[in-house]
Length: 530
Image (cartoon, rainbow, N blue to C red; front, top):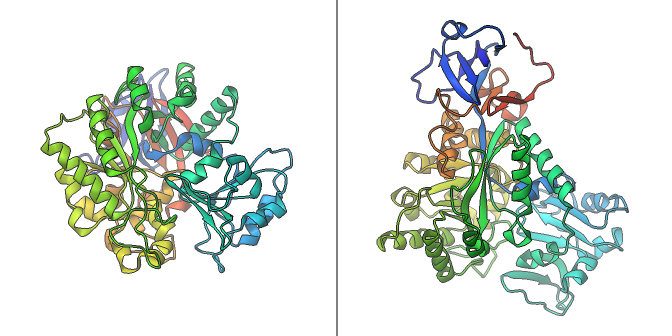
């Protein structure tokens, strides 16, 4: 048994403010109460940890993470700290020659003094003999060099790609900027890691998430069933060896629906640590790539963005998913895209399609027209949002949308209307550190900056709810998850002193993380009492 005492147990209902102690046994919370009440449980074989007044909360969810891609991206170039094109080129040129590919993430020029991306020719100069793929921060666009274009077969005059864009210069030659499915044509040629490498990558990623207080995730895809679901196999192997210190809900890509059903997979199938989540469908693109499907064109644009899946095809996929017992998770960022998605779910309700055991969800819902905000609650849809995007996108949103940026990242509006909110990171698109999302949701700015549309800020309790019980409900986990109640899974986080009152969550830290009753991370200086 493990007992925590002399702490402050987070209770958003304010019904148990005198609770200062919690006991864990058999992987679950076995008792909650005062120090005096739980002292009766102390004895031989019982470990007691003095929290010294620290805040104890349920373990956090990352309700939207690309676990495989984030775990791989941690080993590649991280470009989010670059402040100029020259700095990017310098870092690309410094990648050791033994690496077959140069892969970078988080390329974002919107805050540069001269916001101009490198060209393929500039990348050729610093990496002439190997392919370069630099992902923009939204991972819906990339900058590549000539070698990468050659490998993907994109060197022709004015190349056309269904569902994608190859930007060209005045002569019709590719500039090296690829958007949506055009970028995937390069990505698909990157050699996959071996089984042992993949397993090690995933385990390292799991450990890093534990260090940040994350104990559960909704993984956005099982790296596709096309390659034998290697990521799912790696997760199952970690679970079999008692090394999977996350609870993982794995989404299935829409094009794998029939294959998944043939394997007996559907939403909710699995164990208390690893199970199948939603069917992942893409409606449109992203704001930064100017491919989000909008009701009106963005500033300086003639087009209104893209549908990555045509509406009529989306409807067919939604209906087939429900037939096969899959709940649907739809990527939608632009306001027209979101209206279309809401219309499709409304049509399914009118046609009396059976309800799924887990609520359908809209991923991102970044830009929502005033007329559509209340429809999420009416249709019992989850909004799966990533608060960090409000910090990442504020400058590009104002540049591309002008005053329409006020219709974005409407967390307080959703909360007020009773919509179920589920929070995550979208890593590697944004930081996987949940403190970044907390900072955005509560303060709507980094410390010292002017808050961005502060009326959309949430309270600390509202934000933590979206990272815990809200995310658990959205993933279909039952009431035994993400609460500090007797019988719940013992997935817990202890935070540094004063955490919930911080003006800068990024300066705070995780003191200890527990998964299934087992300590999986602790600060080196953590004082223990037995």
